[in-house]
Amino acid sequence: MKNVISTDKAPAAIGPYSQAIEVNGMVYTSGVIPVVPETGEIPEGSQAQAKQAFTNLSHLLEAAGTSMDNVVKTTVFIKEMNDFGAINEVYAAFFSGAYPARSCVEVARLPKDVMLEVEAIAIK
Image 1 (cartoon, rainbow, N blue to C red):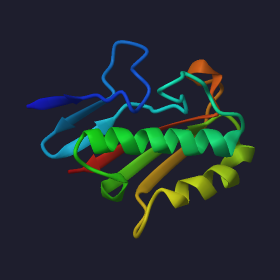
Image 2: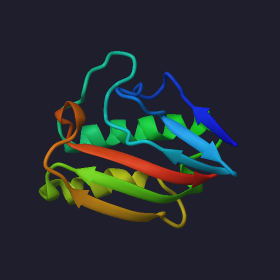
Image 3: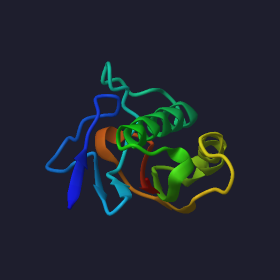
């Protein structure tokens, strides 16, 4: 049985999808972008956007009853590979202990023209 996860502390879905789904003790998030949920604004710069995206992801995982400490896999989509180092600095601050497995790819364009989008798989 799958459980739909949603929270107003992360950006709302902007299409026909759920913010996250829980099934069999695993939480699968949709892509999370760096929109400030309260205002709809997007921070300036890759590090500020990364911080907002990972904050949003953290809130979404908390709504699912888990945390960043339980993330086993992330996928990070970035608009500019030259921002890889700056985004990595922010990424490292959101995880403790063993880092999750990760894929990171450069893409041509992201929703709302943001600089990154992140998705995660976590255990409960």
